[in-house]
Image (cartoon, rainbow, N blue to C red; front, side):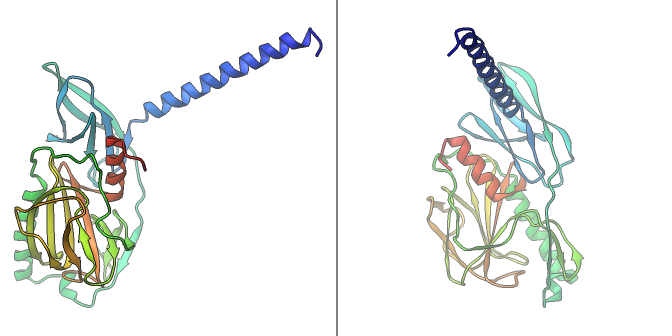
Amino acid sequence: MNNSIAPRLWNHLQRAVVLTAALVGIMSIAHATNKTAVPGGVYAWAVPENSENVRFTGRPVFIAGDTALVGIPIQQNLGNANLTFMQQGQGRTHTFEIVDKRYTEQRITLKNQEMVTPNPQQLERIRAESKRQRAIYTRVSKAIDLSAGFTMPLQGRTTSLFGHRRFFNDQPRSPHSGLDIAAPTGTPITAPAPGTVALVDDLYYNGKTVFLDHGQGLITMYCHLSEQSVTTGQVVKQNQQIGLVGATGRVTGPHLHWSVSLNGYRIDPLTFRSALADAVGLQP
């Protein structure tokens, strides 16, 4: 190679390496500063050292290792939102952004009109049941070991995703608050993680239902069961059977409705499962 060309080529190569490194650095910074979440999702935040009492909308949030996993309500306004926390005795605020997510629409036809428009007696029952469920969702118990992450409670066909804008017999209702997994009646349903049975009940819309408390405001619910295999107050292990698939309550066929509630808000179970795996260092 010509001696006069070699130095110029080397300089060009050096500049290319520097530019590539700079570009990678910019991309890494952009990734690190991508402080966003979506309605119905989870915001993961690396908690600063010596920090405690992290809260969102005044409620304590779930901490896995050194990561706060914050449940965002599906009705959350877009734009800036805040976490508050204490650091070395000083009150501090962390701001992040809520960005939009477009959820799909689902229309369901039910033969039983009373599952769409309940009568006054049924409404009274529904209100009483809702009050009991809200009390569970706002429960904040001590932390337990969830380092094994969440397994799926049932293997089957997903028939309805979280967040669907739902219409029953063409009447609009609240967005879908969980994940529906279809399987034959009698298929075992298992606990995705250790926890304590918070409630075993037979509810108007949800049918035979089990609630599990996994600590720190993390509550899961399992609906439409044909049979419940646990009792209130029982401690369960990961992958322990808690019930069987059924078609009780407001359904069109046998399936599991699985919901996850974090700091009092129903969130996408699959998003939480992924966020927990990242927080505890599990391989995808």
